[in-house]
Image 1 (cartoon, rainbow, N blue to C red):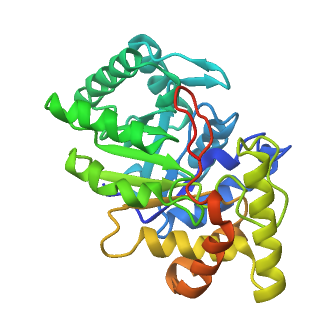
Image 2 (image 1 turned 90 degrees about the vertical axis):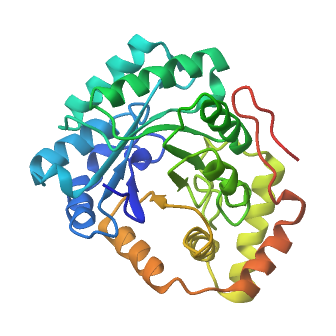
Length: 314
């Protein structure tokens, strides 16, 4: 099936985002999301702590027809500094995820954070994903990560071999602080990529007036600049940066010529899901406010942080 415009991102059902992910109303969120074709999709990973198990328990409870929702997970990242991209490990991870999520196939399996593994390892793992696709476990072979140029390079390399990567997901690069994903979408499409997913449109909690999560890898300078922007926007415009950033990302992602196919949303309550749906349906454009915010961000626009083997920009 085609991906919905908005997917429920499973990263928030994890200890990085909350002390008690088990207390998150996962079944209630998914019950509402899967009933709406706009949001009938889930994206998670074994790396996200108990996320797969919590989502799997909810799916068993809800007992929805598997053909009515889009389901994606990842493979290859085990812990913060622990990766295994061997063919055997990738296959074992996918089969384990099938059990956890109560399914016999995935709409997408991504290699998780490819920038932490060398080219030979990435290519071995992609080859195994194509084997799993041929066996019916995967509908679309995907790669994910932070540095967009590296994702483009991998897609181009495989396209040149005659096997196109089906799906790409990048995070924190399709947002009001960083437009790299929007800028490079044409490169993916030229390499035969069918689906481009935009994830973490609030840059993992950076783009809000509330404190940024401690795990965030941005520089102190960037965090301070964004904090200043959030406070200034609230004081001068009586607007929350998170709201403006959400509108910006949805507006850019779903512009007619964007090439972005879907956005992954991190929601931890039904109310947050309702708000996200309302923002999508409104999609009110505020170009003057967007320009003001980006001018305030200034020299931190499109600055990135180090990730794996790729050095940050700026």
